Length: 393
Image (tube, rainbow, N blue to C red; front, top):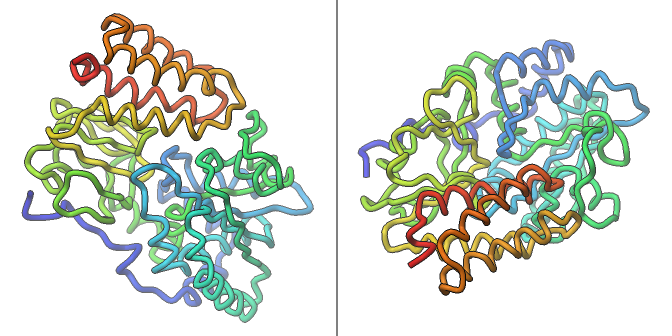
């Protein structure tokens, strides 16, 4: 393990700030000034998709509607991710401040935290924090109310439109897009939906300005990121690091000396083999040299004792279980993939059958209705292509 933990930032957890003072300072600025600050920071959504946060708020603010909504997506269901629950436990005021300022900018008076069903134990303390925050809003004459909506443990509801359906009392299934949430979100109204970490970062930007945030990271991947680090590592936990590091740098600090693969982005992410550690960076596609992989936060390390076949089988079981079943490519495709690799492992199918399964993942990527079915290809292709021998023997 390296002597340093890369460049640990600790802006979210260790940097203490008074939400009242940040709110007061921000409320003295115009909506355009606040949006321009966000756009200038280069902040992209920390859920993994990486949509520019300032642009999302700007597009929603431009919509004409009698009501709008701000939703914090706290449905942290991606395997290997456990950072958002810590934010809501340790610094919920940063998230609430981001939500309130977003509401002021877009013209929303109501916000919701969509809390993962398994995080019900957070609810009591979170409601106390919300009550205290509402008192501050009332003192500052900021008309914004926050409520918590409890999810029921469905992975698919982490997808924004399925989340809306769930909140409206319907089955959690993705909607067709367009229209997008900025035009037609919760209850058909313009809605900004950001995940917990994204909103916490907006607090930092409104506190210090875009410049300090943009000093971190690299071009097209500005700022810091919380990483949930698990697996074969001597120092598991949550770390805030700069974006743009190579997987090699990451492994040097967090590996156990025998890391053969790193799963970047959870089950829906990419598995990076040892031979590609140096050329692969953690960040968003842009002008970074080599391969750039985004992550919602999950970083799982695996050493030589781990079976990559078992790992892939585990992921496919997860996807098969969590598919909402709405579209055929995902509902049937996930089942065919898991039965396919099992048939190859048993010897019922020859190794060439893996090519047909890889072709199936390409079809799923292009035809599945939402990110669940589309992202199955990420882990399947990266594991099969880089650890093919483990799929056969």
